[in-house]
Length: 191
Image 1 (cartoon, helix red, strand yellow):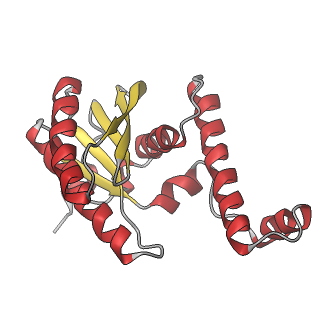
Image 2 (spheres, helix red, strand yellow):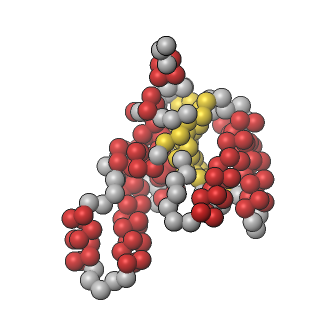
């Protein structure tokens, strides 16, 4: 049997999302052009209040945007089971809000897939050694934070150059980067 889902065309309008437990950054693409980007902040003092806020805020914004499809960066486990659990719950709320707003197609991508596609994969061993040589005597956490900051800046630069905009918010840059990857790799996105 032929899997017809691989032949689904890129929708006319889609939104790409970089989510956290406190907010989402989003980018809207229409006819393969970036047409809007912003950030939605969730209210509440605990994850359950933020989940409720996420459903309402996402519904209100996406209803106005009239997007057909959504691409979200999948939650991946790094170090904290609690953070992973909370992010997964908030992502579920985001998807629920989007579905209530009329979004019909949902896709996901792994962070390293889109980051590598835009030339911002993990630092090589040589690049890490050079960073340490240029910054001797720092703690392991300092090196990790510095690497993270370098990669965030690299994504911001990629987005600003390729889309002729001037943003400095790394979450919005990530959302645009996810959208850029999605434009070129729609058939590779997971359901």
